[in-house]
Image 1: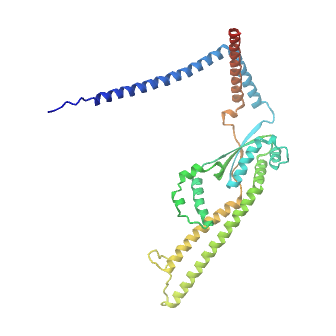
Image 2: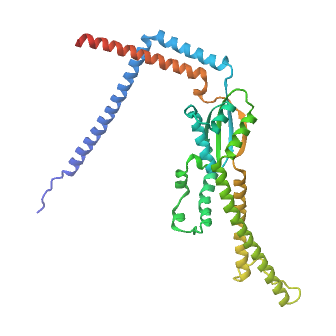
Image 3: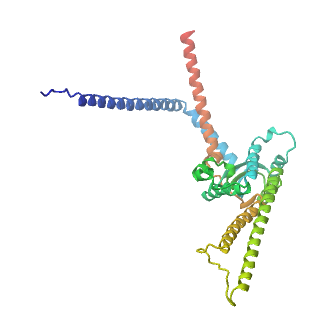
Length: 346
């Protein structure tokens, strides 16, 4: 006997689908309503500005005129320069701190060599930003691994196996990049060469970077001497074995095999170690040359145009005039509201 089972599954699914569609439809309607409310607020604001157009137009004209005066008629105007330097992280930290110190220089009352230099050179501000090159990220990543050698750590540990360059880049700060761009604003007629020389002398003779430079050089040179001694010892051993083999073998035969990739003998092991030590020696000498230079100039200080919109005085003060006009219009409207409120309630 067959029993008919009521099929309510399709009906329930259709009801759920209809409810889901209604949910999305109501959500979209709600979003459009909120957007339209924002548009209405903006339109009300535009109408207020239109009603008070003499104030708006007048202050905009005043701001533009003052910007024109500042840009073309004011004497001793500020010039913009740019310089690109390369340095180590310690010098970069000092560089970023120095740029912040210039902004707050009026707060410093005690004698300060950096502030005195800024006043002497006529520097108004220094903006520092890193040049983020992928090659520098990769070099910094492997320098962390190579640095473990100086601590006698193994570079094939779990930390180095799981550490990825992408995660390493995300943890790098602006000071970690070796190439930095300096945007300098100067008021006065100080020659660019004098500004560049003054800044380099200041940063290369700071106690902190100087001490870090000397410590790094001492460690690197000690490691360099050990590598040179290992390479020399291997060369001496190979020459001794070659001489011994020549004396014990047939006349005119050479027993030291240079291409010994397929041979498991002592000479092959020594040659592999010599090659490894030579690569490490090259990398160490490269680091020594980098730390010996301190802060270097990659691109000399040169004058640049103000490419940013907010740096143009005409645009800057025109916008300020408009904002001032909008503030006055809103204050007038708020005052009218207070007057109506006072009449209704009091």
